[in-house]
Length: 213
Image (cartoon, rainbow, N blue to C red; front, top):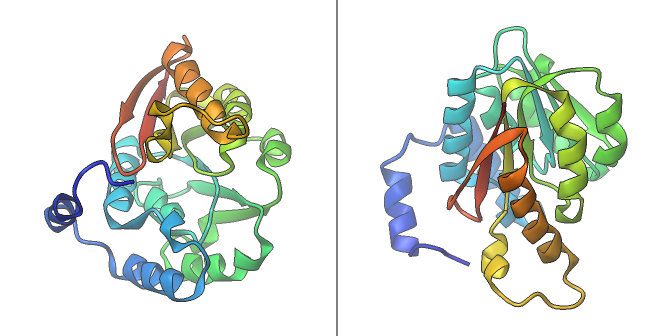
């Protein structure tokens, strides 16, 4: 679902920071070789993620849902010199693809891949995070949130993707549509959680920015 016209989306991209060369190659190869390439963050959202990272200057970053690693590299753009990015995904077949591009970037040695269910992996990460990007299994968003908030530094930022869910948040929820129901509950949770302040941005499929108090 396009919340603004494709022509206006194109104008926005043309008048935003250009897509870095390595990310353009990753974008192209994802569309050539990987299933469901629309899952890629892409040029505009990638520039938003990169800009937020540069403003935050995180030391430790957590990403839930790596896919081909496009957003991972964007999140690294503002990472401090001794920082780390920990990224979690369940798709073993994408590990080598991700690593190829990670190692072509300036941050290869600072990016740590975790394979498996995020709900099992997050509790074992003995770190406090400054920046988190949630972009995986929507049915687990509330579970992710409850695991992540206690691991955040004060002033840390949690980004949640796809919170408008192609506009389904405004439509009657079908009986078996668990993802939409969870996202509706999740959006209310973030708005009302006294531990954070939250703004939902209409970027692509909806991006929520939550700042830990």
